[in-house]
Image (cartoon, rainbow over all chains, first blue to last red; front, top):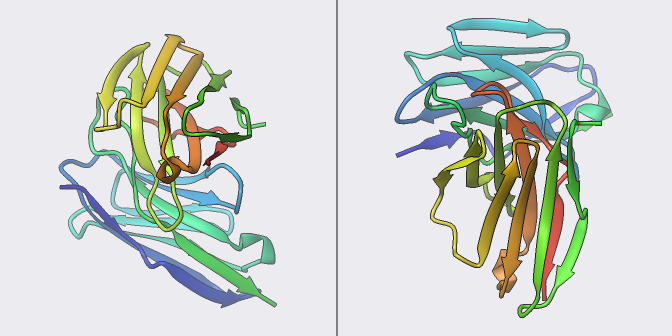
Length: 112
Length: 111
């Protein structure tokens, strides 16, 4: 089966650092994505990991450990606008048109 | 501007109505997807089209009928829906299995 787990909700304050974890068990693995989704809007792409290690992109970083089936998204210098749902998704195969498998998403609330 | 456009943004329909959702992508991608997003549930894959051929139908009820006339357009035809079908319907496209780009979605309410 395919299963992706992430916490349902997290809270943090402006300027802080928050880490959102994601664990996955899928039939195959060809990469892990993180998306951000503000209420009422489309998910937008944040990061992609296919090899073990850390990918840094400005205030956001994403880490992957394939042997542990584990990833995290790290958000630094939090801003109010970072309040959103963060979706972890895995692509299980290499063939074209392989759809992403999504977790339920983590709702992050940033307060002042 | 996401490159993927969905219409309408909002739709209210009765259980006996027939309606269609439209999606258009301007990114030159070769795969398009329909997802359903309900409250407190993960994004659920409904259909995948790769090079205009349906490659996945994720056990979706026949009251949902997709159509992909070309690589840029995707439709979801709806008929005799149930109230539990009320959700946000998201279209996405990708090039092979790289990151998917999503449209803004259609908020569907079945009354």
